[in-house]
Image 1 (spheres, one colour):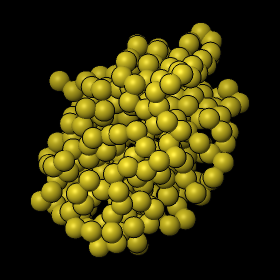
Image 2 (tube, helix red, strand yellow; image 1 turned 30 degrees about the vertical axis):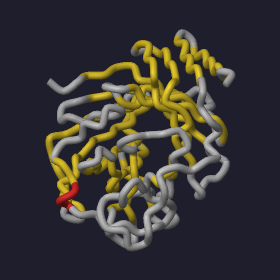
Image 3 (tube, helix red, strand yellow; image 1 turned 180 degrees about the vertical axis):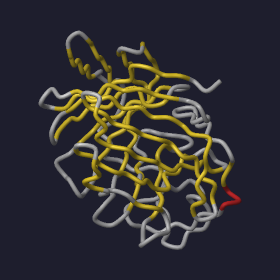
Length: 260
């Protein structure tokens, strides 16, 4: 299959992603979860849409070591994010040593801080857990948007098991091209979906070059015009996110500190 070459130049940085052998994502693999499915995802299944899952804390492990985004406490990622208008933001993501009990699961707490021109514009705590198979589950978030130092919105906040919200998959344990899954579900607030497009991407950015990168397609029915591609490198995590439609934008990894 022919390779697609995406080159985005953001002076003085060059970001290149070569999409080779991936599909357009129209297929579905991995199955679905029945409305009353026991266990993290059922055998070989991934949650879809608003389907309900029942998570058993006994099926979860203490640490997150999925190779596409290991989350050891103390790890930190710094991103440069540029929107369609050229505004640049700094995004800092840090794995804390704290846990939050959600549905009986000791979820890892990840702190996400977004700033622009030195001013805080968003402060979020994300909650993740990994099951025994290696799937990373997204269990919710507490997010606040700021203007002039004051909270102006908490839209998008949710917690699995509260007010009908359902956990989703951040990254599957054994990704395969064509897999689809919901990333989060809180009706009308957070309904993101993911799809595996490729496992053989090549990405070059300010932090370095990566081979055999996982590429996803991220969408949400709440904003159907938005389409984003994300790229995950083994041993590091998210290294690049590109808005394909619905506003445009680019997020690049510029620094990564692995936990000691």
